[in-house]
Image 1 (cartoon, helix red, strand yellow):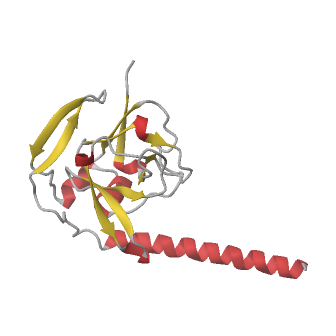
Image 2 (spheres, rainbow, N blue to C red; image 1 turned 60 degrees about the vertical axis):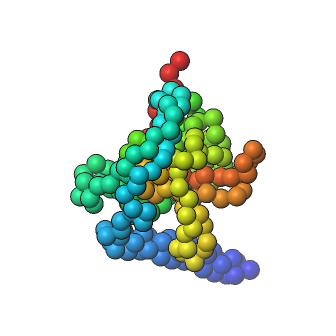
Image 3 (cartoon, rainbow, N blue to C red; image 1 turned 30 degrees about the vertical axis):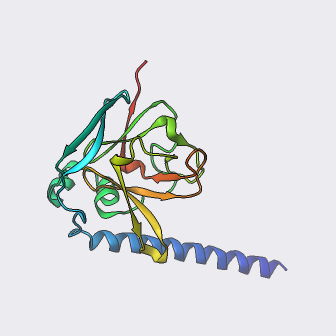
Length: 194
């Protein structure tokens, strides 16, 4: 019995290690070949809802999309922020600074400062990523089907700059039943004063 248990442990460890190695290689390869990835929706114009830092709506705005060269994005963002927002990578679960952020405030796009989520829509999904049941305004995010990894998912992007933010799933709480599972690296949190 001890030999069987030891063998199972070794096989399980090897399987998990191999899976981790495969995911790491996939991440490196997708990053290496993604430098030429450009916006798929054109230069705009786009319609968003502007918000003050305290979460007050400033009304609708029609504007050109924020577009920069790869070199410009790389100079503005950290390596992780660039990989997540411009190459559609995903940060490791439970590693992002905003997963455990519980203060009230506003979440903006790290790339272009577009308002994306309000803390009142945030909930603890237990997944290791900041999760929200709705965006601050449906106009400020864009959803599209994602067929990577052999799974059909729905990618969430910033309407203003096309930054990859994360994915939306249908296992969230009421009132929407949605879980916008976002990368901390794609967001900038502004705590609400007062």
